[in-house]
Image 1 (tube, rainbow, N blue to C red):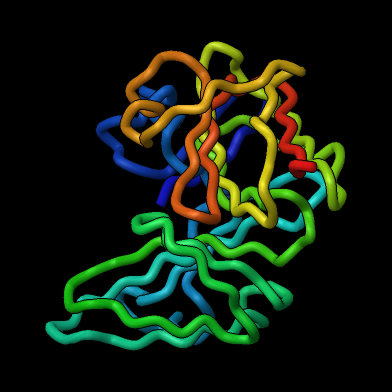
Image 2: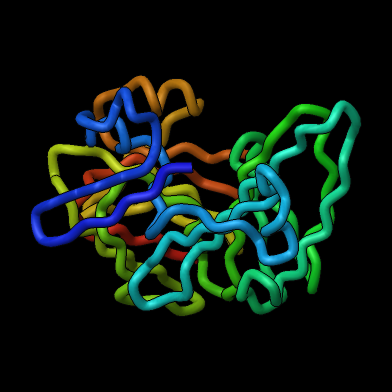
Length: 224
């Protein structure tokens, strides 16, 4: 789990020490506000089986990240109380590996296979056209408009770098726009990631992934 703290012009992040001089490598990774901390109930475990981190978005409550770790030779069940991580329910939980989305009431229950790990992002439910559940890189994100018909997100970062935004859809949407211009739709995730151009791709039935400049105004509107 990457974490980043910035102070004036100095930047420090936690991750692979061999890559610490390559901040551009963070463009496709989630970057959290501070190092992950053990969930209170797992504090005495070595290593902790549940870690919690946050990804701030101005104008909204932060995205919560759960890092789950099973170092046993057998499957392990987890039951996470949303109150313990500061999330009001109903909420949405997304497995960033499988990109499966689950609606959660009070507790998140899941099972990990032996010797495995998961990274889960959780957001409180809103009735906007789309809910950001993952933002890559270290651009500062702020929600400027959010209602039943439109979500407008402002990014402040290096315009030469790209940012990935994964959002859960609440309704059919028109093509997302960047600075007033519609994004190109790609037919597959592989095409979007390999292309040097901006664009978006639909991920399953409920999600959309955008690749956009790290500085600009992103708009997602409800269709109709």
